[in-house]
Image 1 (tube, one colour):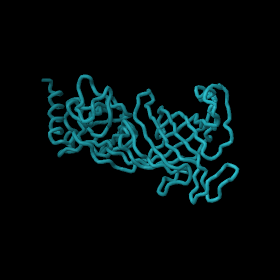
Image 2 (image 1 turned 90 degrees about the horizontal axis):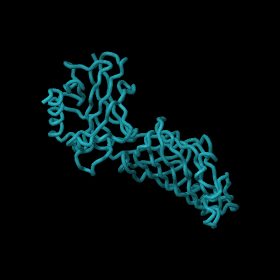
Image 3 (image 1 turned 45 degrees about the vertical axis):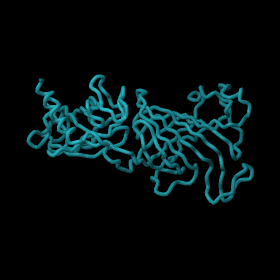
Image 4 (image 1 turned 135 degrees about the vertical axis):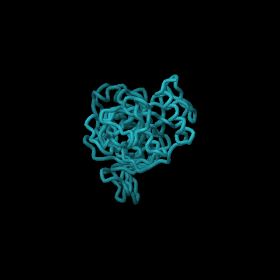
Length: 337
C-alpha cells in the first residue's frame, strides 16, 4: 500500500473510531448573514381578470393599494455576505395596514402595532455557478423592527422558521436593511419574464441565524486534525507547516454533498462526494485557496478540505477557520515554520 495512503487511512481511522466524524457538533450562534437582492418587483393582485395575468411586456404600475391586497414579490439574489451568489427571493404578502392611527383612505386597520403586511419570505440560495445551496424561510410582519436586531435592520420582524439543504433546521430572526432602491409595485398583468429588463428594487436583508450545526475542525489528542498533504502526517510543533504548503484539514458540519447520499448514510469514494456549499478557509483571517472539499468515504459527517497556506503567511502561530454556506466554524491554531 502507498505510504501516503496508509498514513491517511490510519489517521482517518483513529478519528472515526473515536466517533469524532459521525455526529454533528452542536450549533453555535448567533451568525449574522446578509443577502443582497436586485430587480425586486411586487406584483399586486389588482385585477380579477386572470387571463390578463403576466401578459403585458411593458411596465404596468399597480393600482393604489387597499387593505387586504395580496402580492407576490420576485427578486434576484446577487450576493451573500458580500460574495457573489445567485438565487430567487420571493414572498407571499397580505396587506393589513395596521396602525394606532389608520389611514381611512387605504382601509387601514386599527391596532396597537404598526405593520404594513404579513409576509412569508423565501430565499432560495445558489452558488455563483448555479449549484443549489439551500433555502431559508421566514415569516412575520413588515413593520417595526424586532427587539435585539442588528443595528443595520430598519424594517421588519420576521422569525426564521427553518430551512433546507445547508440551512436545514436553522432558526433565528431577520429584517430589512436600508433600501438602495425601493421595490417596484407592479400590476399582475405585467409580464414577470421582463422583470430584469423593466427593473425593480435593490434591497438588503440581514439575518441573525442559529444553525442546527456549524463547521468544526476536528481536534485530536495531539492537536487540530490538520495534516501535510504530502504524507498526511499531522501538523505539530515538531512537524510545522510552511507558507505556500498544501494542507488537509478534517472537519464536521460542512453540509450536503453532490451527487449526495441519503441522510445519515456514509459518504462514498466512488462517486466522490463534493461539498455543494461554498467552502472557505481563513489563515490568520486571510482567504486561502481551497483545492477540494469532499465528504470522507465511510463517514456520515466527516469531511476533508485541501487548501494552500497563503504564500505570505508569517512564521509563528497561525489561526485556521473553515466556513461552509457562509456559516463560520471554530478557530484552531497551527505552527508555521
